[in-house]
Structures are given as structure tokens and as C-alpha cells.
Length: 320
Image 1 (tube, one colour):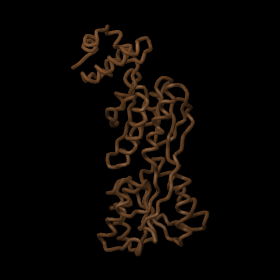
Image 2 (tube, one colour; image 1 turned 90 degrees about the vertical axis):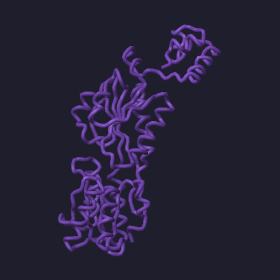
Image 3 (cartoon, one colour; image 1 turned 135 degrees about the vertical axis):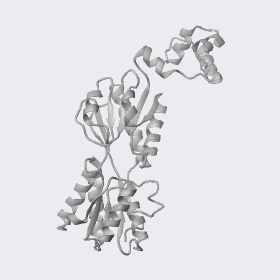
Image 4 (cartoon, helix red, strand yellow; image 1 turned 90 degrees about the horizontal axis):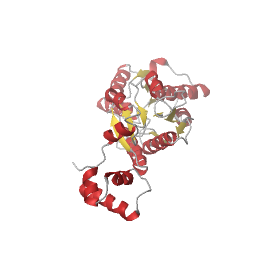
């Protein structure tokens, strides 16, 4: 493995000169700097991030923590995060709950972006510090060193349900996600409030529990089918559950949207293939903005004021 000594020897300079160049210090001449950087490229030098952090107590590395591998939109979020970090000289570590707590230390990473319901608020509050800010993308936490970058679920879901009512729908079914999640709570509350505002009653027997997975949507739809009382429209708290419901309905020879309409929320990569009417969340942009907000907090120019991402309705063929 190529090290600083190898670069210094090839360039005919001291190790400290190479270190000054790699750390962006301005006390090295332009020609020498260019020669050192070219040699690093040619010789395949890669900095030892762990070693640097142990020596300096600081590193330009961010950790992104998530846990649900079934939700494909994570890839868009990760790309957005990585693009912004790369543009600003930071590296990214992606990990899951079990390992992330080992990385969420100020001598190893500079901050964290968290999208994981399994990581509890108590741990996040105890970890966040002036020199270790955290962005959360799935909840609201009141803390000076934690900022929420979340979807504006309530407003867009209210607009969506109102548009469905305006289309003539009156008999609604609903498949919810994890009841402890902010996404579920805001989406379902907007659903109920909009029906109430239009003097439309919602029967709790038309509510089905899910967990945001396709399997749970499939299971809920099969239970609905067995009840022999299909609503006019089935509103699902995310696309995965909606796609599971579409599969169950198709297997039982129900036609969508002739027999029943179905909607989702997220606009996942498979939603378009199924012609699913849904709500589009700009996932890449939300990841990019989360990284931007975190770096601003790291550099002391950001605030902990919550940032909400706007979403829009995407009409497709699963609604009349």
C-alpha cells in the first residue's frame, strides 16, 4: 500500500510537505502541489481515514444509517447524500443499526444522517453534541444539535384525498404503516381530517394494519377481499403496500380501477410499472438537502430549524 513516505520520496520533498498539500494548507508552492497531487493519482495513494481520525480527532466522513432494505427509495437518498458530500470533500459510510453506533463517534465521523425507526430518540439525543450534529429523516426531535429533514406528509395527503373526493369517491379503505412512525401518523391524520371536513364518515372496519412492506399490503388486501365488502378506493400509506394490494386483487380477478381503485405514497421505482397513482417525493433531492443541512451545522452556519420537503400528486391508471 502506497503511503505518505512513498509520495514524498517520489516527489523529492518531505513527508510534512505532502501532508500539508493533502490537508489543503496554502504553504506549498503551486508547482510542488500539482506534482504531489499528480503522483498521488498515478501511484494510487488513498488516505487512511481511520488513522487520520485517531491522530487528529477529526475526519471528513459522514455516516448514513438505515435498516429497511425492502424500500428501494433508499438508493436515491444515498445518491443524493453522496453527491453533495463528494462535491464538498466529504466521504460517506452507509451502515445499519447494529453497526452504526460504533461509527457515530466524533473521533470517527463528523456527523450522522439517520433514517431508521429502530434507532431510538434517547440514543440520538445522547449522541448529538456541538461537534457532532445529526440529521433525522423520519421523525421530529427537539434538540439544539439535531435537525429534521422530512416530507410534508400532512398537506399533500390532504390535497390528495380532497382530489379523490372531488372525483366522486365516498367509500374509502386505508392500509396504514407502522403506527409509531411519523409518516404513518401524518398521512393517516390528514386522511381522516379531510374526510371529516367533507362530512364523510370512515368506518374503522375499513382500516387495515400494515408495516410498509409489500407483504403486509398483500395480506391486508386478501383480508379485505374475504370481508366481501370492497370500498370504492383503497388508500395505502406507501407504494410497497399498494403494490402488494394490487397483486392480491389481480389474483382474485378484481379489476383496478373498475372494481376498486388503489393509491400509494412515495412513487417508488416500481410504482410507474404498475401504473400506480401515488404521491411523488423527491428522494434524491431530500438526500442532497439532508447532507447540505448537516454540513452547514458542522461548519457552524446552519440552524436546527426543521426542513420540510414538498411532494406532489402523480395520477396514473389505478384511479378512475
